[in-house]
Image (cartoon, rainbow, N blue to C red; front, side, top):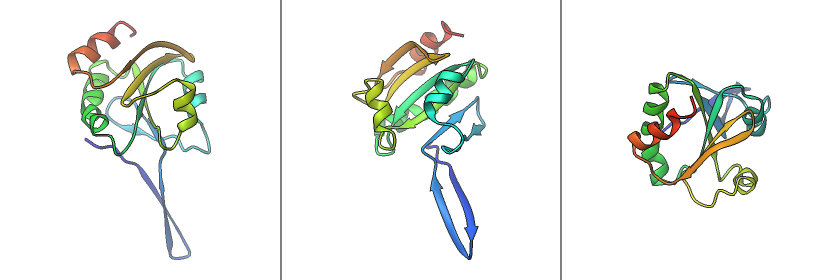
Length: 135
C-alpha cells in the first residue's frame, strides 16, 4: 500500500497541491504534521513514545514493499510505536546526519535516543520480533 498525503487549498480559482514531506502513522489512521508546525527532529526528540523512522524514497521498490508490513506490525503492537516516514530525497541532511546509506532504513528512537536500527527489507515476523523488545 503506497501512502501519499496531499493538502489542497483553493485560492483565486487556483488549487495548490502540497506533497507532504513526512507523515506520522499511529496504528491505521494517518496523522499528518505540517512541516511549518513541526520538524522531524522535534518529533523524534520530543516524543515520549517510541518513534520508528522509515527512511524511504518514492522511487524505491523495496520501500514500497515494506509499507504494508510496517502497517501490520505497528497495528499488532497496538499503537505503542509511532511511525515517521522520512523521504530521503526531501530531507538529505537528516539522512546524512543519521548515516543512512541505503534505503529502506529504519531507526527506532525514544526521547531522541537511538534504540535500534536496521536497513533493508525485513519479514513481518522479524520486524515484529525485533520491535516487541522495545514496547
